[in-house]
Image (tube, rainbow, N blue to C red; front, side):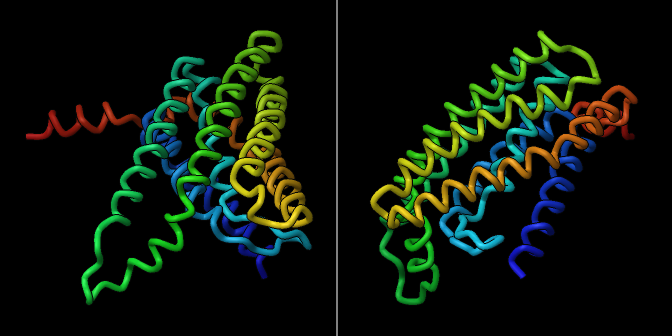
Length: 240
C-alpha cells in the first residue's frame, strides 16, 4: 500500500509545483522551493518500507526543489535559480531556529502538542545541519551544472540532458552528505546503507519523471500561458 501512496504523492507534488508555476510564474517557483525544503525536513523523520527497502519520507517533495531551480535556470537564468536556492536555505534556517525556540516554552496543563512537537523538532538541529549542508552543496552544484550543460548543449531537444545530468549528480551529492551527517550512529550500518540507497534511487526516479514537466513548463512559458503576481496586482489596481 505504501507504494501506491508514494505514486499518489509523486503525482500530487508535480501537480502542485506546476500549478504554482502556471498561476504565478517564477514567483510560484520561489514559493515552492521553501515549501519543498521545509516539508521534506519534517517528512524525513518518518521511516517507511518502500519497494522492499527501508526509506525515509520527504524524497519526492525535496527532489521537486531541483525541478523548480532547473525551470528557473532554463527560462529565467542562473541568477534566479541561485536566488531560489538562497530563499530555500533561509527558510530552513528560520524554521529550525523558530521551532527550537518554541520547544523552550513550558507547556500549559491543557496543552496537547508539546510531546508531538518535541518528537519531531527535537531531531531538527542535527537533521537541519545535515540538510543545510547537503542543500547548499547539491543545489549550488545543480544550478552550476544545469547552466554548464545549457551553454554546451543549448536548445529544446537537449533539455532532457541538462535536466537529468545536473540532477543525478546533485542528488548523489545531497544523499551522501545528508545521510552521513543526519543518521550516522543513529541507525545500524545496514539500515543506513538501505536509507542511502533508497533515498538516491527514489530521487533518481523523481528526476526521470520530472523531465516531461520541464518541457511542459517551457511550452507554457513560450506560449504566454504562465501567470504572474504582477498581473494580479495590476488587475486589482485597475478595478473600480
